[in-house]
Each structure stands twice: as C-alpha cells, then as structure tokens.
Length: 343
Image (tube, rainbow, N blue to C red; front, side, top):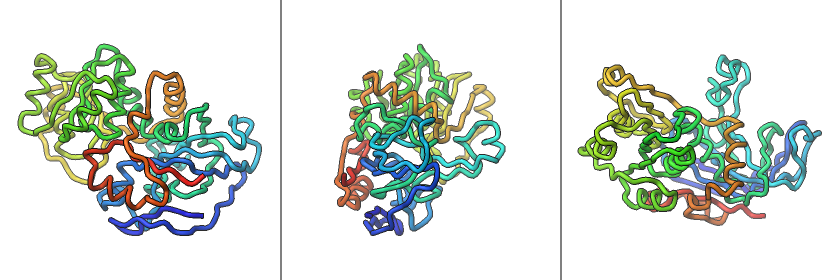
C-alpha cells in the first residue's frame, strides 16, 4: 500500500509499505480523508515539540471498516461503516490514567506525533477507539478530531457558558473551531490573529461577534475597548507562542479563565504576579476525551455546526507533498487542509 511520510523536515514522500493485519480486537480501516494538523505542519517545518523522524503524519481522519478481527458488537461496529477515531494512545497505568484523565496520560502517544500516524491507505485501530460517524460524510468526519481539541479547551476546560465574553487568540483551524465551540454555548465570541484575512473568514463563516487584528502594541487596548474596560471572561490561546499566551493573560478579566491549547517550544518570561493580582484561573488543555467525540458527531449531525466551512483546501493523495508545501507557504490563506485518499 501507499504511505505518506516525512523523512526529514521540509520533505514529504509517498512510499510503499506493507499492508497491516489487525490483531484480535482491532479493525482494518481504509482511510478516506485525512486532515493536515498544525502539529503535522510543525513536523514538516521542524518546529513541532514532539517531532521525531522519519514520521508518518496524520491523526485527523475518516475511514471505512474493511475487516473486524473479533466480535465488535459491544462497540456497535460493523464492516462497511464509515468512522472516525480517537488517536490519543494512553498507557492505562500512570497516575493520570488511574484517575480517568486519559487525555493527559503521562506517556501519551498521539498518532502522527509520538507514533506513526494514519496517512496510509490502510491502518489498524482497536475497537474501543473507533466511533460511528452516524452518516456524516468523510470530509466532515475527518474534521471532528480538531473540533474535539477546540471543544475540549473551550467547553470542557474553559467552561464557557451563555453570556460569557470570550476571546480566542489564533484564527487557524483550532482557534476558529474553539470560537465555534464557545459560540455553541451561547457566548459572545471575538477572534484575534495577525492575518486579517483569517479573522474576516472566521467571523463571517462562523457568525462570530467580531475580530481583533493583533498588531502587538495596542492589542490589550483593543480588548478592553470591546469589553468596556472589563476584560474577557475567557481567553483561549490557540497559537503556541509566548506572545499570544501573554496576550491572553493581559486580555483576561479579573477572576477570568485562561486556556492554553497551543503547543510551542519557547519560554515566556512574564510578571507572574499578574496571575495573583487578577486571581486568574489558568488551564492547560491537551487532546480530548471519548465523550467529546461523541458529543460533536451528534452536534454536527444535528446541522447546528457546518464543519465544511472550516475545510478550505482539498488535495489528492498523490499531491501530498504539494499540500504540505502550499500550507507551509500560504497558511495565512488556508484553514483546514484535507487529503483525499484513493478509494
């Protein structure tokens, strides 16, 4: 079968690899669509904190069940079903796992990051990690996982509720979908970025309340002008830079909540007493939980959220190298980039 691989930063190849064989309790899946995540792009660029090489990328995907090795009745699975999957492999025995916090397992291995990913024509997955797509199309299902990352940060961790004023810093896929998640809870949502085109697209496509161009020097002033000097109830960081985390700390209201979704490599030197002064609640957000996947499949199925608006570019499988190169060069003009696998 064919597999997309990043052998070293800046290079993408399509190679031949052996067909996998499902073990007992696993399914053989035919991959249909795959989304290029910011972490995949970071692996391509050589900037992702968890990257090692060579690496098969991909953890956002949809697939069709080709074969089940064992009885999957308890999981509601059958051959021919179009599904998506939970790509975060937890160890099951660390302190986090013992408390049910499997999304932040101390030894977590995410497909495409700490272990090879899903960008092959066929992969195998345990039954417990496979979720019925409930009739959603493959392109929508491939976007469920990034929506889960965003939802987990905004709703599960940030506890956004109706009436909150929410700031999302970063108008990439995760930021835009965090804004969608916050909006779905009845919040008033603003999104910020250094790319005006991305701000405009997110505001128009997802019905947000406004956008803020992040010019650095006057950013905090703009935030307090919008909130009549109060600051935002929730500020969500979805970039992974020291400056954007500082933006969230500065823009948050006294007693507000700051959620860090972005992943970066750099340190932030800041006046930490501001956390005490404002009595800020600062939350890290990593991965997502099974319930996030199930909730969002139902939410998209209901028609209340149109995930297709987040998919701006689709490439054929054989054009994978071009997809990565284009995304790296023109990221300001692209949101979710998907690859269509041969069927």
